[in-house]
Image 1 (cartoon, rainbow, N blue to C red):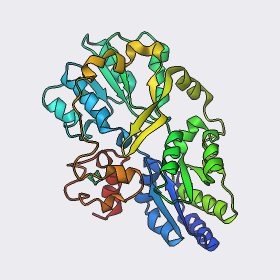
Image 2 (image 1 turned 45 degrees about the horizontal axis):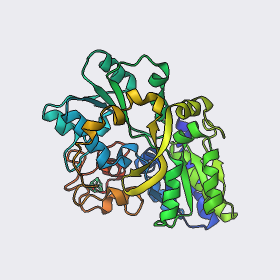
Image 3 (image 1 turned 45 degrees about the vertical axis):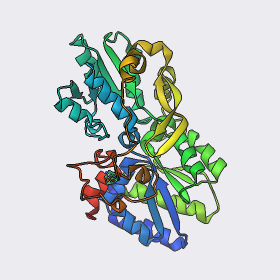
Image 4 (image 1 turned 90 degrees about the horizontal axis):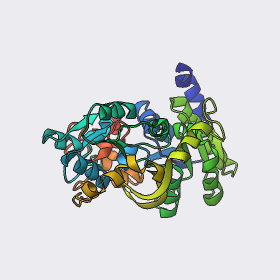
Length: 359
Ligand code: SF4
């Protein structure tokens, strides 16, 4: 691991970027990339070399809408055991959070895997829902128990899974950000491969580099994008060759194809994005919470897209930095979050609060 953190190599890469004389703005769409950039102080180093970095919608908990969280809360408040990963529990909405529901007596539990949730369901008769969240990286793990079969009858899944490529269309079509290249998430590409991203270089003339998560991975990605710009190229290059193959992981992709169907869905901060979310296929209807619990879900009250004053939508679209939100570090902190970007470990605001020293 430490060879990917070598300071002398970092200086050489930064000098090579600076030597090109090309100034750029690159976007990434990954909470783990943001963590590396802020934690290791790369933002300032890259800025000095002529590269500005901005973060797009890369945190799966953050892009889950308030409506989806409110639906999970409604299930919990109406006699369903709701299980989810810890980050989901504190996401605030205008009707509270899952933890608020738990404090009021609802049966809400943190789990560390979908298997935990299946086991809990097998130990009770009350209906139990697992809130599944994540991009291509985690979606295959949701498929496994469904594929194995013999699930408890009282177990169902509320899928908030989203997939990465369609959000690129939304970002480029909205045209709010003038960027010169994209750093693509290595863990997503481990599953998808690099092929699905090619269309965006062809359609929008956008240089792209799939990158790993160590500091030198990020710097190399910035260098490779800068060279593409210097040489007038717009391609998908792979910096993360130690794990990413052009065709990705065929077993995981097949599993996802057999389990999910892409559907249109809103993302926090974005309008409805065609075929950007994953719903369970009809053959799994008996374990699809949207079908099993449709009468309860219909009771969900209207919620605001964001808490009053929260700018998570603009943060997720890369329009502002977390520190530019008036509530950052004052009314909104990890101990009193006003939006999901301050809740999730992968959230831009949480990362900025913990590592940037700008509070
Ligand atoms: Fe929302 Fe808090 Fe981030 Fe502001 S600092 S955008 S209120 S999560």
